[in-house]
Length: 280
Length: 347
Image (cartoon, rainbow over all chains, first blue to last red; front, side, top):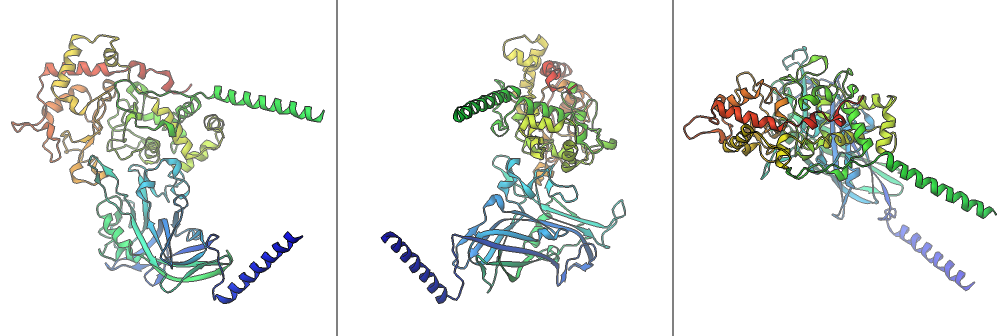
């Protein structure tokens, strides 16, 4: 009986403490050891216009008109920076995503993260070198080289490695190929593999993108899921430290020139705004 | 009474489980893949893909399966024929579906467990991932893996074979590739007359022994070294660029120094793997040795080994020396391997 009384007393006191805490803080209480959700939305645009596959006609800095028929890229190795400066690293095995413009469901990356306040994000545009050389059993989901159609393939079978960003389209300024198409194909990859002893490294187009949420704070709570809206500007693939002409470079794949494309697209992402969804 | 019945039932179940598990072990025994005495250490990690009888049989069936190609006509074994040391007999360049012509000569499939990387340019560094290249190449099998997996899932035999090899009938790309690797890593050629000679089981003729001596004396073994008869490097041996400007290794490394370099191929079973070189330009071994003695072109990336102090290129050899060297090369033919029924197309 006595024991019961003491137990009730503890419950009462702790309940009181929680109530007080809620009253004193402006923010809803969260438990840093509990998890919540944070969403990264990749919204691809062309300059100030939305990216419309096949339909939209755009103009690059070289003055060429172009349309995009396909855009896909890997987002991997995601890290979230908290307002206190600490970092949450998404476990690597579940940190590979493929954004495909023609599949809207791939535009939103859903992460399970500890509840807390987040101020920024960083990710690799592409696939890290370690994963690029792992056993096939460690390449599941979007990394599975045996689960890709040819049209959407993101893996070079003849030169083992992933394509980090794949963009295709047309431009009237490109000379017609033997089938009469004025197509461009940009398949950019290269993880800096080594050859020989000591190894001579090949091109490394792995780009780490770091974005700050500015004045926004992504508050991950039991009942609050921030959705961070990130803009990917296709125009910056062509316009950047190198102004790239489609007529002069209709096909860029595994070649020294691809480094210029990667250096350009390293700057194509920008944090834009945040929505907060009530619930998880 | 009830308790006794339960106990009896448990005993029966346990016994059944033991029988089943023992049975499985009997159904799918392990196959031991060992390193021949004078070979370098094995590179393929058998721990991540232990070879079993059922895995090997599945791999063999897949190796000879035309459904791995777009129109069902081209299997791995189509261009890798056992009697030709698993190369495409008589073809300078191999052709795939619709008779489309490739740009390089099919390499032999033998001793692959001991190789660091694959293909003439070394672009692939994991045997498990190797089959994807010919499967997806439009001028070879021209097929996609998702299509192949769908075809195999509907096949009357494959689900059962995958179950025997991997425990469940699920057909995945990973399993398909691992099964092909299980077949390929067992394909070891180490029983040529030369191997038997090394093991003290046979004698070589006087000509063959003289050829072996010349092979070393002329420095052939500098690149064609060790038990595999290759040092697994990429070199330029001065092939004329007049009709073929294939840049070879450069496509993989993008290093100017690697232009026109190709894999130093193994010489095992070289007698039956004609034609020779990455584009099959030489029909016989005589033409190959003629190239080495006086056919080399001066190309910037020509291997320094071939540059002579008198300003000429190549390895001086008399006609008689060539004849003897070829006599030696023919001792590397492994009749056991070339006729081993385990590696032949299943009946």
